[in-house]
View (tube, helix red, strand yellow):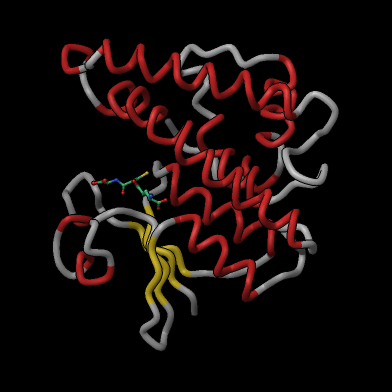
Length: 203
Ligand SMILES: N[C@@H](CCC(=O)N[C@@H](CS)C(=O)NCC(=O)O)C(=O)O
């Protein structure tokens, strides 16, 4: 059976767990003891030399890391129900927005939520956190204009774009970011899905 090495508090691993639920796929979820540093040690680093989660592993030895690559692989193997449009332009648009999610939101979110979730306040880099917050707010303003007449970012259908965003928009309240109105409605819509509810982190 397909294995996914993950941690229940991992945003990037949550993307893969959401896609599995959306597609009705079964996988063995293998939890790594990240607190004990298992992700930076053997045998895990033989699978993923970057020591990050998620990593996909198949019985025949095929291994894949990077959450967006894993999502695209699952889509290619199991195209139904589709999480990308059928046409070339729609697919390219999904790729564009998945990339922008990583470039404009995930790194900046990590700068704020990693300390807030896992570090005592005296270790927070408040200047870096404030800069990250400004970058996220600018990005959400752009996204807001794109969501003004549609429920979902591409083709008015839930897609891999929303799968990528869901774990990160979960933390807008913790980041003390009030999203603009269309982004707020979209965030509520995607966080209400059963796949998001079933994978919601405990903190
Ligand atoms: N670009 C990677 C990022 C994965 C990532 O950074 N995962 C975090 C957990 S949410 C992690 O493993 N962090 C441990 C580390 O970087 O040492 C992906 O999309 O899979």
